[in-house]
Length: 446
Ligand SMILES: [Zn+2]
Image 1 (tube, protein in one colour):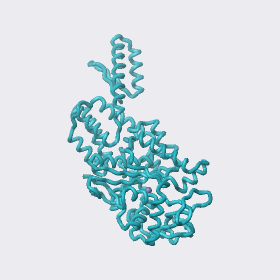
Image 2: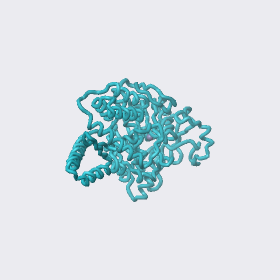
Image 3: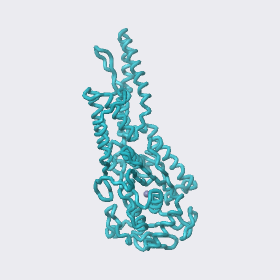
Image 4: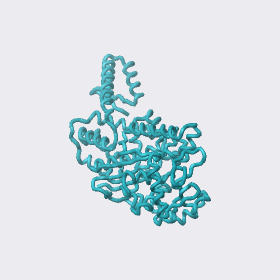
């Protein structure tokens, strides 16, 4: 049984699939106008965790994650760089996929791109015009927001409140300030596609409606994305899709909170500052995954430089514990069930990690069996996306440290204390602490 918080109902619910044993998930992917940064990756690691938990529970998961590869900002920025918008977007698509592979994120069933679905988008817009939910004005097509009775059901916003909100820009073409563009007529020099309304391009919201329904059907199980997309993007997706089909669009909505820097949402200008592919030169993909998992995805994640390093040290400790203690195939079933139960309950990764660290501590203190604990920890980490193939490397480095410590013991025996201390100080710089005692020398990672 998997339960999780559904933004649509505003409460935790037990998941009931449309088709027994199957889950269909749509995740809003990147608008490829900039480098993928730590904030973007939080959404995709969250989606990957959700998918892995479902798969562990025996579900077949069909996940779709799009790329928005045409958009006002893409046009604007590609011009600034003097590049064709397609070439401009492609570099970020490539950078995203490279980073996702490094992060051990399972590949979606498909990565659809908006520009490859212009026909589906045009069909959907035509349907909305036929049903009276959309209107054509001077090259553009707009959605008639007030026609859709359930508008606001995801975000909890009310049309009346939105109408009186002063922040909506006045566009004289719109019949109502809340109406939004489904199709935008092309201005001079902009990329365009032919449509029944002349040359133009799709609006952002309609792309996701067209692509999700094409691959997952008119009603699918879960729609995911960041909380910044709830309004207006996801609200508009619901309005368009449900008006066109007369059916529920997605049964469950899962939203991850934002990564913040000093209390502010990670902004686009910081894309270079915290680009995922740069971060991965500093810390391992496992450490970065641990960094995300330490905070529940429904809580804001406050970035600071130290927390990445902490996650890195923390993961090294787990790895060492595993490489020193795994043997055989015996599991601690009670521990395993306890760790997985927390994941089945709102994908609670911090709770699972907390239990895991407590178990490791107990095993190190001799109050829990080491090998079954290590085997269990390893198995759970692999289920939730950590790549432990690196383990061998640690086994070797442990043996090298053992060797250095043995040489130091020999020096001490021969009273070459000056060199023995030098070795101790050098190891100390690597966070390796030497513990001399009557029974011989031991070492540990600080
Ligand atoms: Zn979307």
